[in-house]
Every structure is written in structure tokens, then in C-alpha cells.
Length: 599
Image (tube, rainbow, N blue to C red):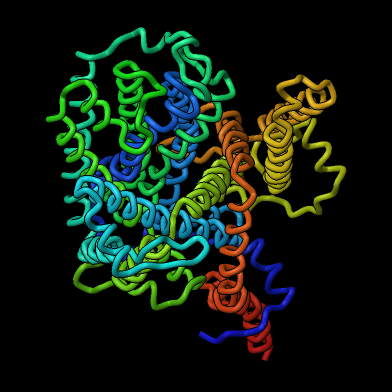
């Protein structure tokens, strides 16, 4: 395994070193998951905290009754990302999700960055859900557990909790053991939790129809308390709806775990696209229905941001339904925990199998056919985070990793759609790529089939689009007051950048596309992946500065592991060296044969 010092040449190689996926090769993981299992996994990991907490919180503090529109915008954004995931998941049905996607078409270093971000997302996601589950159960027990821990296990320190939450630590380990015992068994339990969760959501929507009052969407400004907007359907204005959409978007995070489990699917090319799209649609209708009922049953400014559904049923005189909702909330949170924790060891397994993380993490249990050690370690770390930290300081870090992964997948879809077809590579003339050839190809398409030149042009255009989108989004989020005041200089710059973004995608669309047949393809390429990148980048720029600081620390740890260990133990690096040695031996073998024939 040897730890060695890094060299400049080794770093340069990581940018171009790509993973070669062998579609016909076997896998050590059990292929037991059906389309229904993957769909339930996607619904379970997504439909949890959003229904039972997010809807009331966003309605009260950010968007008012227009939270329904916010959820619609967030759903459209998520479906854009979901379509890209569906195409790439059908192309590369390997455990690892966006990590494998970026490894295949971009390069090893970028793939490690994405994989490390996904580990962060699922670690904090698991810790957040297990903490929420503890707090919900604690609330139902009149805070007996928290009072006991605070009296017997108090803690002090910046960012730490007030007490050691041993319950969350234990629950996280129990779930990790359950997942380690087998993918099919854990998916079966998840299907039960998800079914109960959906039944409760349907019960809430149908029962709420008996108590809805349309006047709650048109409350006059005189009836609204201070600091709660101006009343009506959108009391916080268009800005509130957009900000609400940014918050609601994080209620859709989790569907990418479907692609992560692709290597354990029976028919991944078929199952992954169907599961992604169906799960996102079901989750959207659940969020839309719940938020509509919530804001029509009770005024938006009287919502309870922590537990809106039990609060409303208590207020309207239906306390029995409060306990039905509580059962659904617990099942939903259990399902979310399973959905957040299920993909985590599989990301670790994929990276360790490729040699980028320590090899021990890739060991598959011979009986249970799961990454046993990686699952237990991941569950223990998530439990420790939930045990000692106040997770509100870390929650936004999950968003950075997710949004960056979504953006990279959309970029990968663009690059692969315009990539050189494998059969054509053998017959392509190798020529020097000059600036003149790049410039000519961008504005005057000379080839009707993809070549190295056209693929390279698309890659540079996608990079330029990503950078321009970041500047465009940064200006919008950084100069909100100037934008509200319609400052001419700012509007001029934004309009110019918007035209540049459209023109960059136009130039991409002028390039020849790959003729490879796909079981599922994103429609309207390059426009849908381009829009997905823009929206994801915009949401990244809305995150607070301290989140970027924590993110930097996490990436420093990751780079230390990669550049000291992973870069030298990469399986692709070893494969490349073996291929080069064989190619170098071939000319010598031919010369030896010729000399022997002359003799």
C-alpha cells in the first residue's frame, strides 16, 4: 500500500486518467433490487423531514401560501437533475453514483472530489435524520430523554451540543448493522416504512380537505402580525417564493441514492431511469398536497415550524389524527435514515475498490454480500456526529456536496453526448489541435460525426459555461439590493452574461452528437443539462460563507488522503502502467522475430 511523496507528473496524470467500465464483468454485490425496490428507496430517502417539518417552516417564515409554488420550482429543478442522473445511471450501472459518472468521462481527480463530497452529504444527512428522529421521539415523551442526558452527560464547547446524545449514536449503529446484514433485507424494511409514510401523507391530504378554507390564501395585511409579510397568497413577494424554492429544493435531496445502488439492481439500465423519475414525481405530489392542505387549513403565520401537522390537528379539534401523523413521521424519518445511510458505504466501497480510499473498506462479507466494514464504520461516524454536534451548523455542508455532484453529472451528460464513438476512434486521423481549428469548429461545423476536436471543443465550452454561470449567479446573490433597485450597471452585466450563457449552449448544440444508442436519453440536450447546471450553481452561491469554510476543511482532509495514498494505489493507474509496458514490449518482440527469421 506504500505512502509516497507526491510529484507534479503524478498530479498531471490524474486529470486525464479515466475509469474504464467493464459492463459484462461480474460484481461481488448481490443483484437483488427490483425497480419497485429502487423507487421505494428513492421515495423513502427523500420523503421525510420535508413533509413533517419543511412545509410549515417555509410557509411561516419564507413564502407564505406560495410555498406550493416554491415546491413546484424546486421539483422542476430536481427533475432536471434527475433526468441527467437517469441517463448516466443507465449508461454506467455501477455502485458509486456521481463518483463513477465523473470518473468515466472527466478524470480521476475530479471523480475523487465528487466522491468525497458525496461521502460528506450522506454522513451529515444520516446524522441530521437520526438527530431529528431523536428530537421527535423526545418531544412525544415530554423531553424525558434530553433531560436525562443533559443532567448526566452535559457537554460544553463551540458548536457542540448541550449533552451527549447516546440514543442517536446507538440508533445509528443499529441501522448500520441492519443495512450490513443484506441489501434485500434492508430494502424490504424500507418498503414497509415507505408504504406507511405514503399512506399517512394520503390520509393527511384527504382529511385536510374537510377543513380547508380558501380565505387563508387571501388574508388581508391588517390581519397579519408584524414581520410576517403583507398577507395574501405571496406575503413575502417574488423574492420570498424564490428563496422558498431554494430551501424546498433540499427537501428533494436523496433521489441520487437510486443511482448509487445501481450495481445491486437486477436490470439497472431499465430500473434506474424509471425509479428516478417516478420517485421524484410522487415526492412532488406529496409535498404539493401537504403544503396546500397546511396553508388552507390554518393561516400561514400561525404554523408551527417544527411540527406543523400535529399542531394543526390539535388546533382544528382532531387530536386523534395527531398520533396517526406521528406514526407516519417516525416511519418517514426511519425511511429517510435508511435512504441516507444505504448509499454511504457503497460510495466508500466504490472508491476503495478503485484504490482511492483504504482497501479494507472495499471488503465484501462472503455471507451477506455487502460492504460490511465500510457500512459499520460509516454508521458509527454518522452516529458520533449526531451524538456530539449541533447539526444546524453542519447542515448546509450537505448542500454543497449535493449541488456540486448534480452539476457535474449534468456536465458529464453534455460531454458524453458529444463524445467520439468508440468504433470511430480506431479510424480517426490523429492531428494537432490548434487554436485556429478550435475557433473554426465552434462557428463552422466541419464534421458531421464527433471527433477528438469536436469533443474537446464541447469540453471547453462546458467549462466556460460553468464559470460564466458561477459569475452570473454570484452577481445575483451578492448584489440583491442593487438588483431590487434595478441598478443599470448591474442589469447590463447580467444581461450580457445571460446572452453569453445562451450563446455557449448554442455553440455546443452546433457540434455533432454521438450516435450511441441509449436506453434512456435526456431530451432537449444541451438545454436541459445546461439549465440544471445554472440552477445548481445559483443555489450553491446562496449558501452562507461559513459553510464554504467548513467545506474547505473537509476537502483538505480528502486531498491529504488522496495525494498521500489514493493517487499511488489507484487501480486505473496500475492498469495504465500495465498497458504501457505491453505496448513497449510489442516492438521489441517484433524485432526479435525478424532477426530470428533472417538467421
